[in-house]
Length: 238
Image 1 (tube, rainbow, N blue to C red):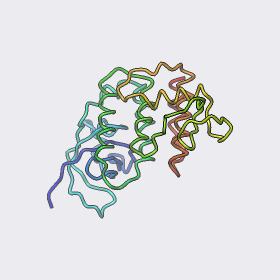
Image 2 (image 1 turned 90 degrees about the horizontal axis):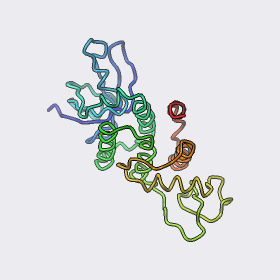
Image 3 (image 1 turned 180 degrees about the horizontal axis):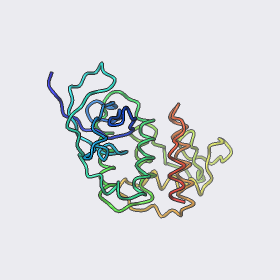
Image 4 (image 1 turned 45 degrees about the vertical axis):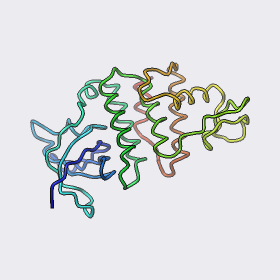
């Protein structure tokens, strides 16, 4: 059996011993994968390489029948230091990593999705912090997950129905229909490109847009559950 090279994005780390952990990564070639990372308790620790949304390279003798793969030569593929030294970026990565660990369920590889995630993380690491990045990221991610909304609207259709993913002129038709102000804020999010610098939202509108986006995800992904780090994210940005 030949040792293979892999690249993946760190989503979750579960301590195994004092110097090792089972790390869940999303890989380019195999989708979700669990790997055993050792040497975390040493002076030159690998802990810095397995932070939320770190993009890593490693080698292993991949065995589909194994739940946890044994690896070697774990290194960073993208410089993660600008994120680790910025508490705002770190908080956003913790939030996005937890959400991704809940929504990336397909076992088969999805190269286009992987490249979207990798490019987004690379941009986030290399550029000044934007308080809108996580919102725009979630908006674009929905297209890869299959529930990007229909943003077309006829005259008078100013209210966005989160449940059905389209605009309507009947505010009371669904309990998940937003008023015009919140609908326009969410439209801005969905229409923005990942490299957009600012959505021009107030702090209050940004927080409301995030809550509306999370409800949109909950409605379209069965069993997604609560994203616990959302509370920390909102506290840091309050």
